[in-house]
Amino acid sequence: MKDFEILVLEGTNPSGVAMTRDILEAARLFAARLGHASPTWSFHSPSGGPVRLQGGLSIETQRLPARRTSQGAVIVVPGLWVENAQAIRDRVVREDAVQVIGYIRRRAKAGATVAASCSAAFLLQAAGLLEGRRATTTWWLAPELSRLAPRTHVEGSRILCVDGPVITAGAAFAQSDVMLYLLRRHFGAALAEGVSRVLLLHERSESAQFVVPSMLASGDALVSRLTKRVEAALPLIPSVAELARELRISERTLSRHVRHATGMGTNAMIQSIRVHRARALLRTSRMTIEQVALAVGYRDSTALRRLMQKAVGTTPGRVRATASVTEDPRRRRARTTRKQAD
Image 1 (cartoon, rainbow, N blue to C red):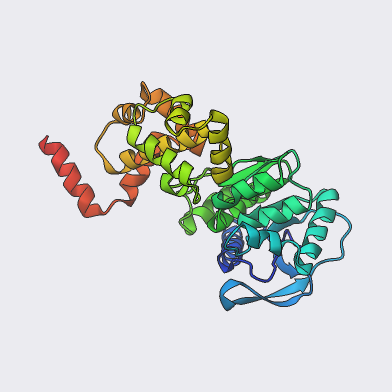
Image 2 (tube, rainbow, N blue to C red):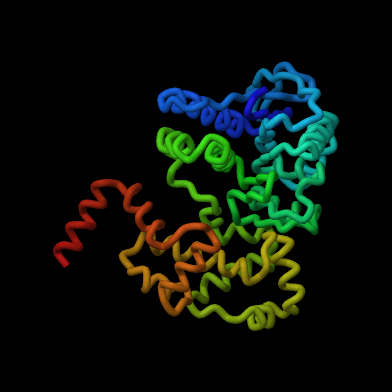
């Protein structure tokens, strides 16, 4: 029995498959150096044999195991390549997906942990695993997941959601967050942190790093107008009631448009815009954290710190520190010289 069973369907994102394999291989090598137990894994598909991934790549797989108990293995499902919400609806009813959904349902009922990233969260939804749970998916599919699963608390702005034995992650590259979390949970923090450092994944957090506000509209003209209005109004953002009046609609209609386009409530979307602006100022300006807080409509840095910690799982200081680490050394030296001259 392997520690991880990775389920692969035709059209799976090759990045998610490669990332899973590379992280597990790095964990195996790192564990050997530490003298720790090494993770084991296997790739599976409904029919076994080679499976074509998106873009023409392929991977060799084994047939789905005929297991009726959890046997301890973690089920991992990388995301599928889809271009729109209709594509994911069509994909989950194809025969291979139906077989995988049934397998996931049986294994979860027997007590297995199941983790899926990006659009693969829809396979978990079809298996009935997201009912009454917190879950995430790639942000642009979050409204569709909310529509299909009204009793699921969809948190489209998060990279990683852990709700008991069900783990979901955001866009395709969030597969790395899934695997690091699973390594930490099953093999310890030392191994997970070692792999993170080796593969330079240590800068990532468990919350989405600020979706660009202009992308939040998802093609909805009304939400696009709202987004631009809020960005232009910072730091003095009108109330939701005032914004609705300006747009000549009711608050309820505004909320419905925002929820459909973004998967968020109106206030949550406004907070997302504030956080995005704060991040930009922290990374590119010489403003103090207190000044940044005022620039996005908060009375002090404490309020900004609480917002960022709650919304994206990090702090203003860490955002600024990350910017300093990744900044071109010549620019950093020039900035330091200017500060000294001041």
